[in-house]
Length: 230
Length: 230
DNA sequence: CGGCCGATTGATAATTGTCAACCCTAGTGG
DNA sequence: CCACTAGGGTTGACAATTATCAATCGGCCG
Image 1 (spheres, chains in turn brown, orange, yellow, green):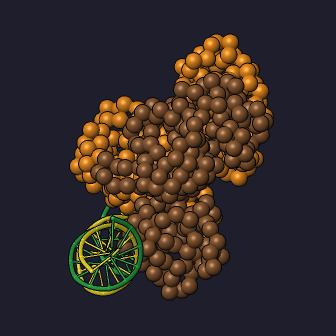
Image 2: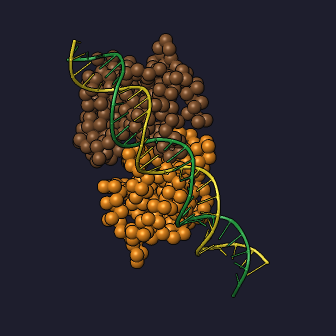
Image 3: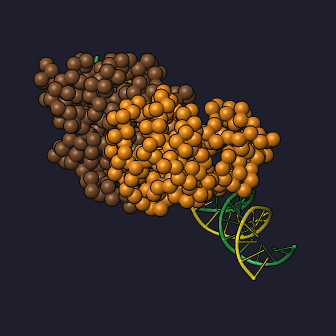
């Protein structure tokens, strides 16, 4: 089991640069847990009792506003660390993570972190880099929302999804999990109606191919041009 | 000199929980540098050769888009660590930091970080928390830009400025550095025209008091109500 | 097979950006 | 010391994007 996990894990950036025995040490406190499609991994406001590394599947991370509106913060892809609220000094999770397909994650108790870091100091640097790259994405998104109109924001969001969760199919590259127009709207700060109109227009131009909870990008290059030049 | 710095620094969250000798150790590699109003501390895209702690003053951190539009990422207030790109695994600064008033900062060479962390492990946790809280702010901003109309975004931005850089004056609380309508627009993803209209309306209602590069919040409570309830 | 969730599309309204003109004042330099 | 100027601010008119409201369609899952 540990050996299986080690092979699953050794190629992941978080564990990059660790020796086999360090990986085993890190894995000692962890257990792997299955999260069926639709089930919550953790919920906004709850005590941050665990942190995670996703092994397989995809999670949607959502923030709920006081007024009840949702914003999709990001999607978690295999290899990523997540739920590291405590490490950042917050006692509760700042968002809700839900499995959008059947998923598998390594789970550590938050209390294991200090000990883990002292035994494997490189983990602290790993965590810092993880959070740093996430900060960068967030800032990028702020810049996009400040300076780009909706269509380009949707284009950027789609390209990001393609990079993170693209799977080759006959007609192009498909987002590898069920995703609705509403989801895309919540990623880009617009409404499902506007997203629907945009995707319809793109479909007419042969850029993408729609479907129920499905998006296939047929011409990534042209989509990229649209996102950049406008 | 070191003693002076230590007293300046010991109350700052980044150095919280460090003993006096640990603080001295951390300060050993640092020098303090003055940045006159208007001068750049570091620039977007340049090699991240240093990281910093602000001792006095205020910095504006700006991201420039390929199309030449600016977005104000945040303002740095005394006690904050900044320019920690290398620690997050990026070779260059992702934004430009400029002193908006005469400022003073501690400067470390980036190369000193690994050694520093090994001698003062608590710094790694400090840095992680700093980046974590910044990530939180960025996400908060994404949520606001996704769900709130301009007026409430401006209200939130003003309240944040008041908290970070508010100074009591007779008529209320003034932002303690020169700030233009354009700056506020670049913080909230709108135009200086819209900001000007909003501030004018608020001034008529006795909420704020305007002026050239000046904003005084006369009634923070009412502004807060406006930001929250809408 | 039926119901429901997701998607599409039209008509309309509202917010906010754009363009333009103008004012004001702080600071500069003669 | 005063005049001038440039940068910051204000305001109006108009346009455009995008949200809102409403109706309808269609295909999947139970």
